[in-house]
Length: 414
Image (cartoon, rainbow, N blue to C red; front, side, top):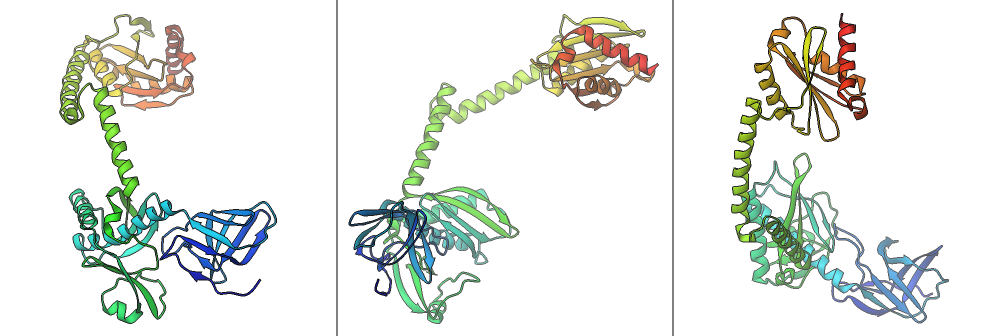
């Protein structure tokens, strides 16, 4: 094949009649260098294009674009022996347009961050993909909610102004003198490409962009987190992805409202009412537990070693509620011990010791630890109330097995 220079035409076109000037086939992978190349190779955070190259009798689905010896090679799976012919190269245009929306939005975000958070904000990395954008930047702490709202509003205001995007080649020193933002640590040549959003942003950038900000259509933040010490990270959506995100949130809102049998616009009031009702019910339950009214009336009573034991079972799993039940028991049974097995499938055991028994050296923590260990679980707590996990529920399936455990404990203790 003739040695020809490759020409990058991706700024102006997403389709080209071209021909291969070099190729390499390794197994079923084909790397193809096109004379006129509309495919962008990943750089500066912007991901590579995908698409199709089609020649006479062959077609290559472009899965990636890589740099090979200073040129861009489209890469894909090709199971036959490749024979180069003139071809039509077509970038996945819908995907490229979404990438361009996100890339231009990244520039708008950078400007908005510097305006609202301060001039100390500098880009510290980015990912510009078709489905989302990610932007890392220097900042001392989390962004407050009202600041994030203001930044999002600032970006959308420029989107809806439909500002034209201008790009031009400039001498590096001239571009920097004009106020163009350059990435820290990035190496630039003597001549650089400058992307200008008039009155908003001026940055050195080799990526592809929309022709005007209005093509971004809509901008929405989705996440704001820390990326490293002194570096924050935001993620956002634009265009169709932002619209789908808004629809998804609306559908979730409608579904939640339906579950609570109200309209979406009344959902907050409905939830507030339910929270108030829940507080009233919790207070009532607490009163019942303290009074002992909620106590299991089928408690099994057994005297072991001169001490009265009450063994009961409940599906209540909340330890705080169990503690209230134990407090009520201790008040009414100062010379007794209560053992409660809790959970629909027994998952924990609790022991309460009456006040008059504490002086005799009987400790709830010791007893619950012994019972729990007998089932393969662990336990512990304070002298008057302690809890433990149940490893094997079958070990406490009957009251008699619990009595045997407690009896064994007293025999070992004596």
